[in-house]
Image (cartoon, rainbow, N blue to C red):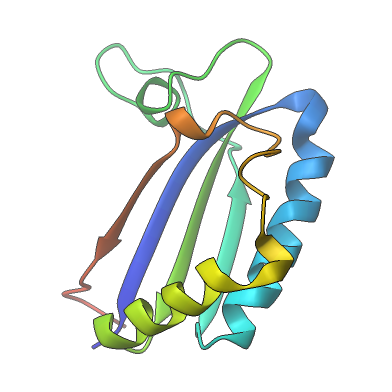
Length: 117
């Protein structure tokens, strides 16, 4: 069974092109090091909920777009291997320091699928 890392973050609208460029580079690095899928999606139908929602989860402000992303690996062990290589890859060095979004509001985690169709 595969393993999935998921991410949700808020990107200021004026930074969305810079974010896309960063994501393309990151995706290439992840795939090169062994991820089987890398997806970045811009929120299109993500209403601000009364109690919970994607925008609330990342404390999205006016003028920010919610991004939902995930990376798929063959296994948790492969994910750990890939993540080590990605974090050491010089092409991504400093990318979070100059990120076009507030990394403190990013939500991320690893997940074990229980259904794969």
